Length: 199
Image 1 (cartoon, helix red, strand yellow):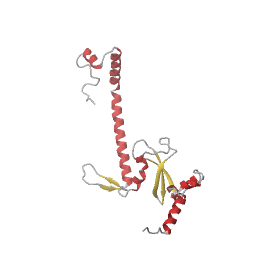
Image 2 (spheres, rainbow, N blue to C red):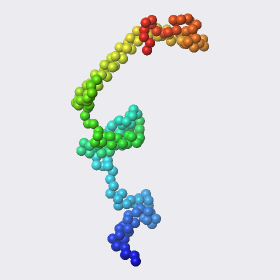
Image 3 (cartoon, helix red, strand yellow):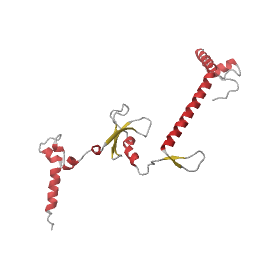
Image 4 (tube, rainbow, N blue to C red):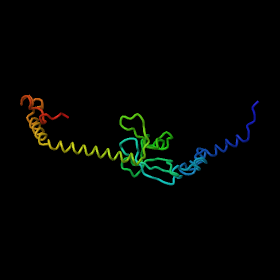
């Protein structure tokens, strides 16, 4: 013998059926208007509506440099989306870029600078200002070393220009560089100063 169905279950089923969009659309209501909305979808609000600040950013994952809009509430990011004003991504993000919020809010994320000195076996916590100064110092030192190297190279430039002209002339004659070196004899096929190290 079947148990009688409880009235509360019937009412709940009818309310779910009434909340379902399909019967309203079958009755002729427009699917582009209120017929497509349920009580649950009427109460939904976008996450960005809760934000009290919006700031631009750049995706940290690859070298493309996609633009981000970072929505924050009480100083904490709550949503990340592509910046439609960015000429690079025009508001779109790849899956990694869309997961930037997880990177920003992960509890395992380091929020301070760790520095390991050369040949050291331990990490030290350093202030951000110190780290920025250190990076600027090393970048400037590298730039100055490269400029000094370039000026030394320019001093040897006439020899290099002569070698390029000789190779161009050999190509016009249809010779390959090693054929030209064989034709000229030993010791004449190397385009560098005597005693200079090969790079």
